[in-house]
Image (cartoon, rainbow over all chains, first blue to last red; front, side, top):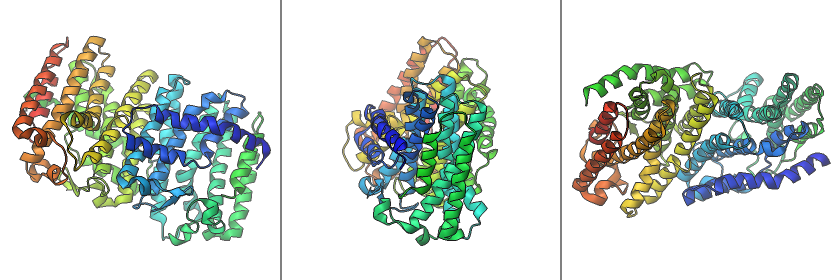
Length: 294
Length: 294
């Protein structure tokens, strides 16, 4: 990984994690529910989405403190989606980020409720933030609810389930991914641009970058499911084939998927060239997402 | 039922239902998900929460159009909570409002996602409303997210599950209900008062009324579970005893529960007397909630 990106991620990891936990920890919440919410938040992962949001603020030389509440709301949404996705009725996963999934530890009912609570908390956190004007709060909530809800992530998740066991063409696969994983990744960039007061030209370029990042993320996810071990991934490898999921490697071969990945990586860099700001961090982020090992 | 309340409910039923459906119908949502969301919304029910919100506006002589978006958001939250509560991992109910529950019709995965989507849509609808100022949107979202989330309804739902099969005292039972059903009922009054620009004295009185209404709703719910048939209720009667739930009749006998209900009804009316506005509709609403037959 690029050393400046590594330094940035390391410097932001502790404050971001502290903020993520504190917003839940300080509330009066019945203990089992609080434990279940904290468990999946603490299980961690790479925090790609909130870090992308913070990276946009960094590139635009804005105070990062301004990004934390939106970044944590985003991570709450991402975490809830993982808890629900792992349920027996959905992907039925026992392992996530190298740890037993939420319903394995707390039972299904509590896992469903912990997901519901994290989803709701995302909007509570933004609406109560001391860092945003009412207009910014409303814009953030509009963006996040659209990205996370039926016209975004949840819709994509349903399309993904419906596509299991079916042959799906590349266009349809990209539509699924654009909603299922792309919408929330795009929110991280959109929210960063909004909070950085980026001008219209920069926002358009960042939007293109965000869309390319979303595709890159998914292609590499599919490639890793084929090529990496469960140990490397911290989750069950090879599941796509078992579940007969349409993936980039399944449609294009692994070689073809890698070719497509390289093409989107170049698209992401091209978009960044349109921006009149430093962009080394966002370049490094694209590189990391495209070529990560887990 | 009081005739003026009946006339009010009848006059508002069609526009409210139309608004509830239209906000989902007009969006680009993948068909199965949209169907599942609409199915549970159309299953209807009494719309107690949105109607309470509108009734506050009516008493304060405010245009009711102002209430629809908040009322629909509230009903989305209520509907999502029913879909998730009915899941096999939770209450495992096959019947709701006289119709098969969401997961019976669409399967568990889709039911979970339809619930997630409705929950998210509640915040989308308020944030996009043309009827509220940014400050009103933020206040509504703060109130709603707190009432619906971990410190409110979801927390109460978890406490309710944990109390199954245990002996719980009246104070703990009231805490559970204050969160599980009370918080969202209270939001309907709070949001109405906010949108009606009620003054501080009226808001305090309405708050007391709302808390009494919440208790009344639950006591009568418990009584009906004992005394009414599944046909009358449109859901399985007698479930509380089967699930060994702590209820008012279980703790106080049916006779004692009815005595408590009458006491809270008087408390609700006392609170209304503090308000310097018409309150016939809210009186009739309390009467309806306390003595309803299903």
